[in-house]
Image 1 (cartoon, rainbow, N blue to C red):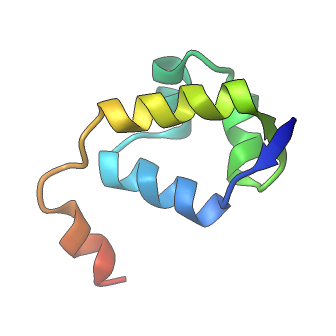
Image 2: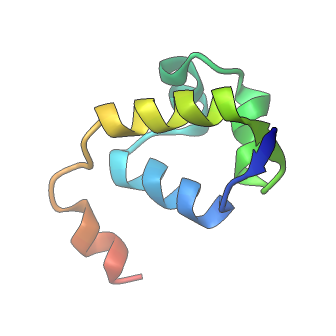
Image 3: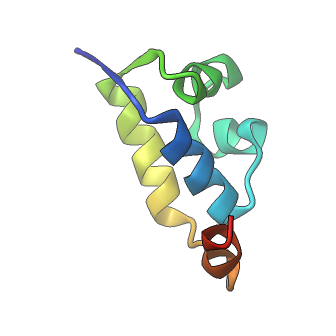
Length: 72
């Protein structure tokens, strides 16, 4: 089954960690086009979503970034 992510949430989570799409792809072990699909709301596989979630869970947000992002 394929699932669609919230593009805004994915952008937010990458920003919280100071990651570019390409950096995230390498860390998650997925292709850059797959990250791009997630960033545009296209469906991705459950296995890919699991890789993305594990990667985000393993990388803590940058100190103080939440306050900066909340100010947007």
